[in-house]
Length: 443
Image: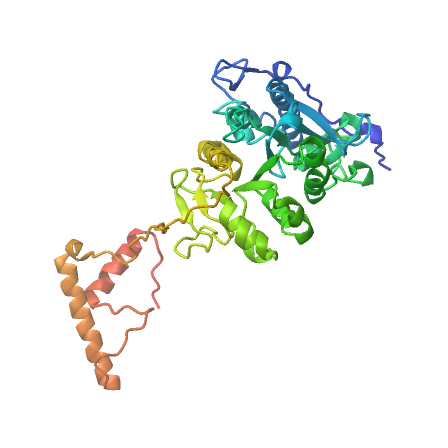
């Protein structure tokens, strides 16, 4: 009887979390290239076995994340562990980044990244491809925000909080949290195990889901790190919009935050306004102090819809706020990259509202509509063969005469599956069938 031991299973492939050991380097344009051929970017399909490819990408992404974290720290951000008060890194915790001088800031920008991305990452297609590490990560966003002013009377840059919406699964062996895709690619007992299983031990207190993480950021993190009168600007990416809007829509929560939240930039989110119940949050805040930036082929900043929606476009516009093009036609993850100048520029516009005035979105006259293509059948009459046209007219005449004889209706319709052929046409068809090798039915 055949018996296979656990020790006989193929070992899970292991790759070093180091760019140079993986065969890559960062060139002078801040792009990751292959050492053996600097013209090549990251090569995912290097093996026929998908597990080997996933394990290599896992190590590659982690190596890049540590590079991003190092750059964020050089920009003055400090890594903090949640839940607040966590000191032992061996215990389950979720990292976030907070400005080291945030306690002195009169304005704070809180960024909730996509729920499928690693902390500090915007788009791996940019980080590991054309564009480079800074452009495809939060490094570019943080750098741009640090050039802004907090208010007309405060020329210092705003404080920044980078929430961690994607990495919420605790990986004990690595002593860190991972995203769902990274957890699936993390080391297993063998290369042929089905998957890593999420159990109770993989949960982080108060941060085991994106919804809980949003609540922890608002209820504990922001009050702990910021001044009580600091104004809060919020940027949400992708599906994070669902959880942030859902939280702020709660009347008890909105009563607490309505005096502090200055504006909300929804980048790539699609949360429908009819799921929101708080009239004050929807008809006052979203209408007047929020903007959505969607994927679109239109230039960044073009107005797609007003708060009421735009029935002249197939783009989803029922979000309760003015909607603009991000300048990115395809990918939600690159919408903030493509529209950063417009999006962050609007945050600065809100922050520079004169003292004593309350910012309100201006009225937008929306002319945008999807282009209408002419679907009428083109006129092919100039291309008709005069001889064939004459034959067609003769056939139509013969058909009409036969119908009139049988039914008395000179306008009888022709059946779609029958074609009336003359004797000459039938003989020609037989000759063509013989040429094509078809067997003629002699019966």
